[in-house]
Length: 296
Image (cartoon, rainbow, N blue to C red; front, side, top):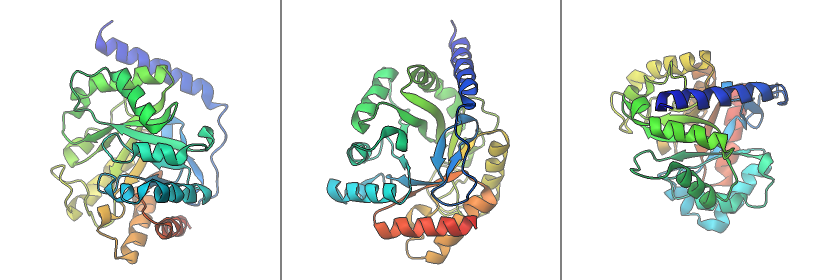
């Protein structure tokens, strides 16, 4: 079987299974708050609107808390109703997050990770098993191709795309997608039939958002194009997760910008949910309040 045929077979089989199971899923909550669950498009994955991100400065900010304080923070978020947690192979936090979530019912939260696709000559299924061991989980609810930043990423990552579909057949990954940096990569997302979920940088000021290159610099002139792509993806049935709502920390000292960014992401761009990196209980409380306000 050719790679293309195999990819189509795996994708079709998984899609059929998802359609068969869709009738048994609970209905999404109609109440619009930060901790409501929403369905991420055709993936059928249900997550809370607000996700706990663990990748601030590559996870260095969260790792600096130490395991005990980090666990306390994760449990605080969980008790406040945040049940969607996000990490990545490239972060310092997958093992810490796995430890923090240990003992909680696995079906009570969703876990998203991101795999680094620059690895050469690796056994992909062994890689996913390694990520599961580090995260202390039987499965990932969402697995993304991390940091796709070139226009040719849909072609250069086909091996990884196939590997994720195979992992879904093994039931160690439930759905999949990609995180993109830069307009050349973002422009390849609309019309991509492999994608089910997209992780996209968005805020009202264009702080550390997509521009002509993948660099984490400010691009206010390109905000409208990013929003247009998000709207297209939503129409195509993708689940869209917003990131960099605080501009990668640029809005740390501006509560007004943090409020505007949350409102912009959900009201103007129309993301399904958003991930925010936290280092304190106060930040968690504020993000919940800001999102509740944006949804009101």
